[in-house]
Length: 168
Image 1 (cartoon, rainbow, N blue to C red):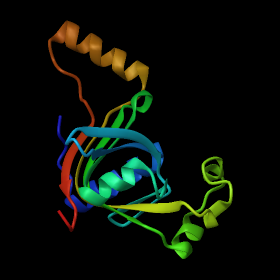
Image 2 (cartoon, rainbow, N blue to C red):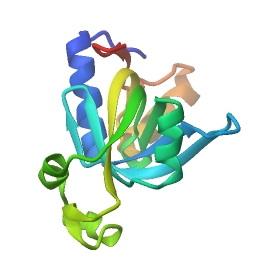
Image 3 (cartoon, one colour):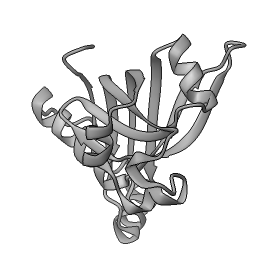
Image 4 (cartoon, rainbow, N blue to C red):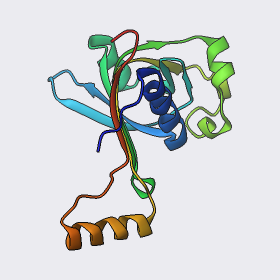
């Protein structure tokens, strides 16, 4: 069931879900026109922007250079939370921003920290999103299953909303 919430509330929900899940699949278009996807750790969600660290010479940076349109998809199946975001990406090297967003978890890929020579940022401006946030409890799921089986009624599925962001 789709719940009716304001666009501002839906935008807040999208931001919170992305932060809580912490990882996304970043989908770009490769040089043959095929979709290419890879997991990325979310470094920050600021307003309508999602930030990631990347290697400046990686294939995804080349793909973003050719086609700025990207998709972010993230899921927490055990919590029954899912988000899909369409956006516009750009790659930049900004030492101050890299220092601000630095996390020791990134040292695995960038041993010299925020000053690593190939460290770059991917900034994604969110244009539009859809999310699904359902009750994650197995007990609630089991109750919904029994209700559907016995009463022939579909269970409450939680929140689902589509929202546009300022750039979309």
